[in-house]
Image (tube, rainbow, N blue to C red; front, side, top):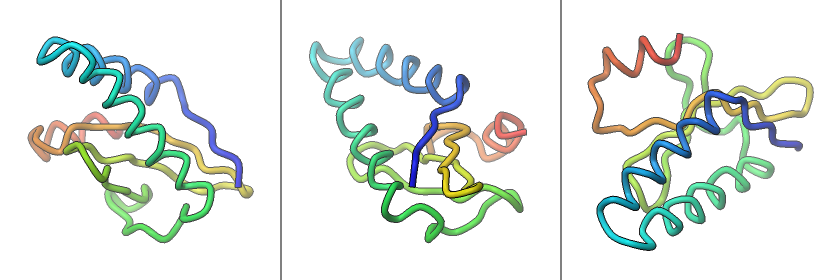
Length: 97
């Protein structure tokens, strides 16, 4: 399957990078490497994750408390958002809309 990151998901990655880079130099790069690896795995495992908010699959990152919200359409994984699981569920629900 192909993977397509939507603009909103790219911005989520940039925001996460900035947050972790402020915590420690190099941690932002490690964050991106880890999340890109998790996203790449969707080419094989896309569609097997549980569905949230009635339409998005949610894959959890292996190293960081982030969730990847995506849908599979026409053999393409569309990544809509990459959000911090520590945020309020109400905020996440609103952000996904």
